[in-house]
Length: 302
View 1 (cartoon, rainbow, N blue to C red):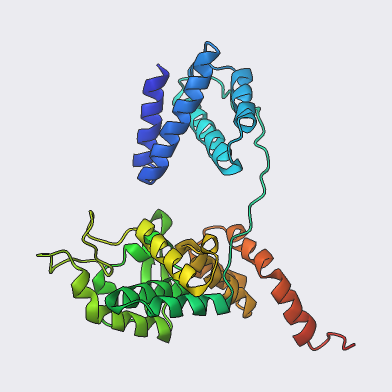
View 2 (cartoon, rainbow, N blue to C red):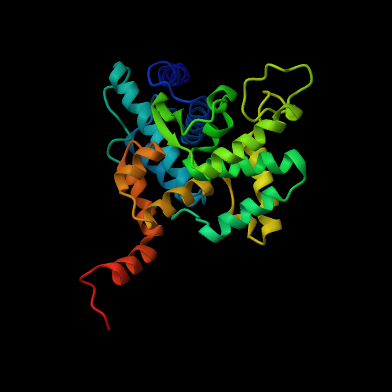
């Protein structure tokens, strides 16, 4: 019985909520994990009582899962039961009485301006087209704050005419403007001059800005991460601090340090909720406090 419910729930997530494939796969695995736990108690998702769900949630913390993974599994179970209740397959929601524990959000890793400059210099020092490509990747990501999936998915046509900004389709299909500074545009021009050497043979019509000879015809986020780690080591930067997403963090933090409005940064990042953006105020807090202390006209001079 519950297997059919899970299948219907995942189908609803895909069709009605347009959930990403990775999200649907993760929720399927999470519900399978919950089902296995309940089976050991002589129950399943269809017959579980509130005590069973409460025990499962408590077990997630006891087995040492990361807070993020445990929170996602709880969310999968909660959403599943809300769906089941709405369909009328159960008359109760056994997950309702269990309060979700509050979990702190870790502060993002951020590179300093000087480290970003060293990273770009190390990328540019690589031989030929490899260096031009990596420098372009870093400049584009840092200048625009795009997600790595958005950068990897850029079509060649989006940059062919040297635009001052890009129209990016982010999460949920929402579009936003991503600005490009002079450095990013110059790096893109240099890359476009050698791009053809990276296309798969016989694929002159490859549509991606960053083509690849691998499966899919375009550079992957994993490969971008590997190239960044190599550049970090060459620049004398801890490679654990560097990733495509860290460049996005640096974009946001450095804007706030420079005095940008939080709402503007929210729009540039494509965050639906400003609370997500506010985490960067903590990262930039020390620097911002110093600016207020030394630059505000009413600051006391000692």
